[in-house]
Length: 297
Image 1 (spheres, one colour):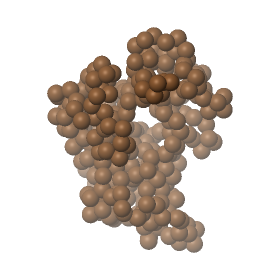
Image 2 (cartoon, rainbow, N blue to C red; image 1 turned 45 degrees about the vertical axis):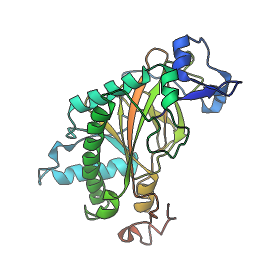
Image 3 (spheres, rainbow, N blue to C red; image 1 turned 60 degrees about the vertical axis):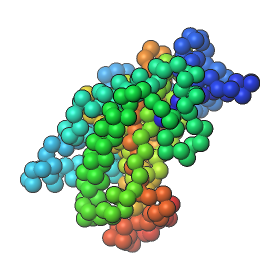
Image 4 (cartoon, rainbow, N blue to C red; image 1 turned 90 degrees about the horizontal axis):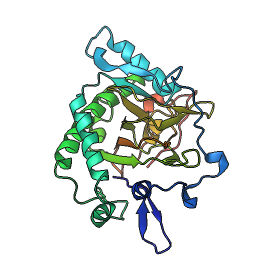
């Protein structure tokens, strides 16, 4: 679970949550970005289009409509590097409970959180103890996400012309990492970011956000906001999928902005093949038009 911190002169850490609670009126210098990297927040709502296509998964079980969904996934991954899904099978009660316990955690006193934190980024659990209901409620949501990922990876493989059970054993033996982030309010949101631009390492990432803040880079290298759609989850292509698809699907570059009025919570479920598994293009996706690209590990 991420808790953004900033070092002080005595080498202790002051979290951004604490800075927000202190009511600081300006962004600490260490957070101010170079002008070229700063977010552009002058947007005119409502947005004329969604940065990512919205795909309804309710038709997957209909043999007549399923091919249409597969084609929508193909176009979304090829043109945008991701999409949003609705009617995905995860009830609102689970997503709401996950966001609630995440909020409970971040509302804990900072000193308490720091006593429980590990500084080792390789630890599978960065905080050893959480609010009493956290394990059950976040665990239930994580299990539901794992089932959804299984469904999504199958239709993504189908959209590439592969068998839906391609690499099934490797996928089942892969990893799931739940990253829970809190982005407190920021007095100068035009000077800083909650998370800098990056792509995700794995196959697919599934994101739940309670406030707008996620932005994706389009083909013209312009940043586009991803609106919060009630009941929807964001699905993003990762680096492993880019390699596996032999470049047909590109991993999506994204970032998180902050805002002046509301803190934002996001829960990202990152799904990858096993860490020691070398990823190479699917043999059926290598041809003269699409020569072999580099493997990933």
